Image 1 (cartoon, helix red, strand yellow):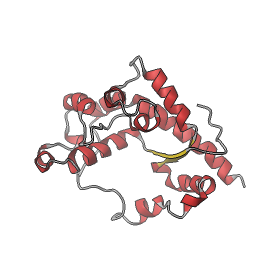
Image 2 (cartoon, rainbow, N blue to C red):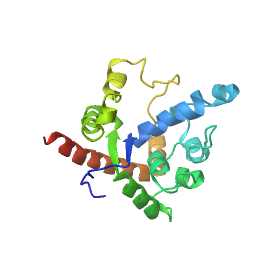
Image 3 (cartoon, helix red, strand yellow):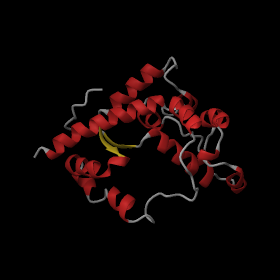
Image 4 (cartoon, rainbow, N blue to C red):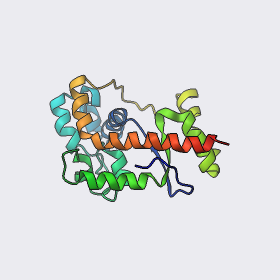
Length: 196
């Protein structure tokens, strides 16, 4: 996608590194906030699932609203966002992948972009392009200064095992491409925001 920033925007989108996002999403949506308390006790945290379990659970797992955890950027930004089976199961080898990826990147280009692990830089971009939001956008305060305010969740989770990482990477390869494009857009938007 062309990293040249727009001068006006239709949206603000925050992205996160896909492996961290999938693990956090699973632990929050599928374990911590499942509507049936009995399921909370039987559901495993993302890092505790075996690679074989993740290969099926990652594709078929749905929260109480019918959403999975794979390819969140495509779910939010593509025209196929409501087609959960398509979005949650799409990979680089899927026939629809080029169309859905291009559609997602096209929509991304019209957004002010934030990257969760680049909070300070995101704040500068928000302050410049969305000044009406600036007073309410305090990611550094929430993430760094006050752990009680951050979304830490109640599920203790670790990083994925190497074998599981590879499966999650394949299931979220398109999300990774969107994440990389979002970082380039943030760089370009940051350059405009800080160029005086």
